[in-house]
Length: 291
Image 1: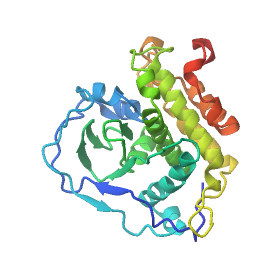
Image 2: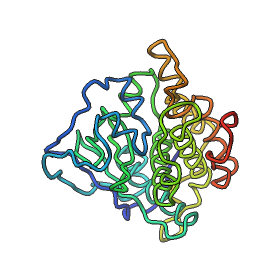
Image 3: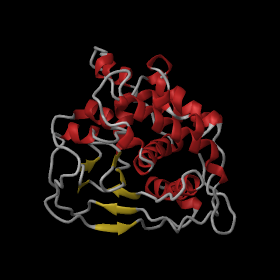
Image 4: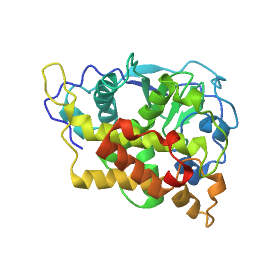
């Protein structure tokens, strides 16, 4: 994944939060495996992991907020993780505006250290997540290095944007009523939780296939098409956060506790979106054996 150097990305509305913030809540006990489990969370999962429900403000103060400095061009995005994520929101918003009537963009926050949210504390110890009450995505880019340390591999640029696109997928589920129509019914291989996560993977794949079509005001594409190597990197990231792969780290795989889908499922549904588009992403319309 590469931005065109001369693309104008200065219009992004990303904000940084956390520097000097007074933070409430706790992520105690998650550990590095908990970090992986927390990756790509949506809906009520985050609240349950943090020991609290969604909608309760756990903050002890007002977080400081600022713009992302030095994020003007595609060249800046190619050379800085924060700017890469901020710039990608322009291509994500452009894509989903063409897919969803009445689309409204989520808020996007790059977390510096930690910050309080209505869904608990956001930090690199929790992982990227979407907070439905706020319609906001939170990501601490330091998470990539933690993930790399756990699995011994570098998380490449497109894999990073896959994570962001997945969280955007949860936003689409929120604003289109998919979350309300398919509420959390617990864990398990055929659960709504798994179906929700696999659909977000599919949405991410659909965006990756079309991401180079979104342009700035002068008609310059924000992004170049993904290379095969970059796609493999994104697929590897999807496989890394499969329930079976995560649970195998502790030596026991229990499908009854699945909440995100297996490595194979996550890769396959990403590929489904990439090859066939959003119209083939209805994971709630298929049988458990077809997930």
